[in-house]
Length: 239
Ligand code: ADP
Image (cartoon, rainbow, N blue to C red):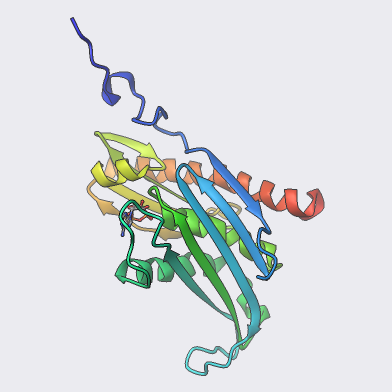
């Protein structure tokens, strides 16, 4: 008799993770010479660079704020970041992710310290394997800290969701595509404030609560890796 073990039988996911396990994570701060701040992040098959310029004076009157800095984000997927060459340039998805990234980071920054200024954040997805919006926010937050921008906290981000009927943490690309739901979250771990919560797909209210709790736990683990990246670059006292 042949016994086929599926995800549901052995409780392991296709890549061997248990339900509440993040993919292998690596974060390095200060990887670019010319930007004011930068970070490189890998989580699973994602490879992401974030660069920050600013705060610097903003001359665009239409968006300039006399009482605080504005934050502008550009999320971009490289043409070689996915299996089929991606057409270069912005599309609806990247415009949306750029916007929600700025929204997720904004509450963490002491913007009122820099009136009439801009902080510009560039996120380049070099390779994508699911969860790039969250990984981009996590990397951008480290790049902001690397630029010396005063912040209340480092924003940490990851998704939970549902695939194969199970509520799971940090969906891979396959789990995202084949699964039932995806719930990206960003938090400021010190206060517990949530600065991003999106949901795609279907979950029951009970599953939703479980997914939110899982994503928050994942963000807390990611937050430790962010702090370690800053410590590795600047030493214990500034971490
Ligand atoms: P996120 O990357 O935040 O999970 P989506 O849910 O929109 O955002 O995308 C899920 C995954 O699908 C991405 O991480 C990437 O691996 C893949 N993907 C996104 N856009 C494309 C594209 N244009 N071509 C091929 N794969 C893509």
